[in-house]
Length: 357
Image (cartoon, rainbow, N blue to C red):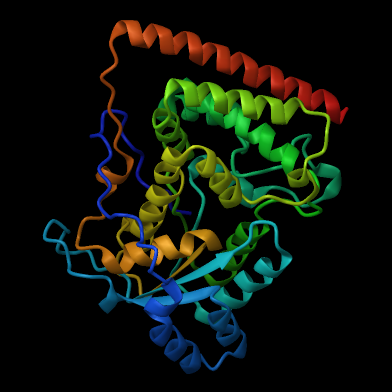
């Protein structure tokens, strides 16, 4: 399994290389002709059905845009990229993943996960092994829990870790009505990749950096309101409509972005660009013939737009950069706020665990 490069804490600040898709952009219309032709050539009715539903698209290399001058001469982008849009809690998505990967036989399978969340692909589906908190996109999973905590602090800082803990508990609570474990399509992708000999690639930006950037995009007033609203949602004993139905991470991001518009850029748009980079320009896909991306369906519009609009601007260093110019006074104040949030997050986690006993 290939993981993306480890970001440096001293990297340059983020500069969005590609703007978000304009409202008029439709990923299906943009690549429909290429996708239909490839699906027809494969002679697989199941692929054709996914294409017509908008769940599957194909972007050939000739649509990628110009070759960037800075790219190493021995690097060759994939001949084609297929993108399968899934629902993280849908049994149909599991079947779709298996069907597409076996039909396309890719060299690489890029999943919407980062190193810190790779453990989702190995979570047991046995009900007797179900953890106290439901596995979700914010979970600190894996065999080495404290290693995951340390990585979260190193990449995103303690504030990002605290926000991740709060979101993990909140997501577990609002998805408590789901009868299926989270991320089964990723587990299916791992298993089929092993069967067909494809390399599995972790294609999402580290969640620690995403949450750090999300946190920094908020004003102090917005940070306070967000923490209070999450805390109230966690401790509330009254069922809300969201608790009766499963909520995907993308839907949660959209809900947060509606209340806090500045979150839209770091939570969705920037990750779309990073996933596009992983699909066509990461070292893992060098000289590949076919790459398949398994991502949440809500990301497809942004990913396809980034793939075909890129003018050589998708660079790793520009997609993960971080910088800090805090004075000692602001650092002290932020430290006090951070420690308060961490305390609230740990208390909420403890209370949630008590409810499951």
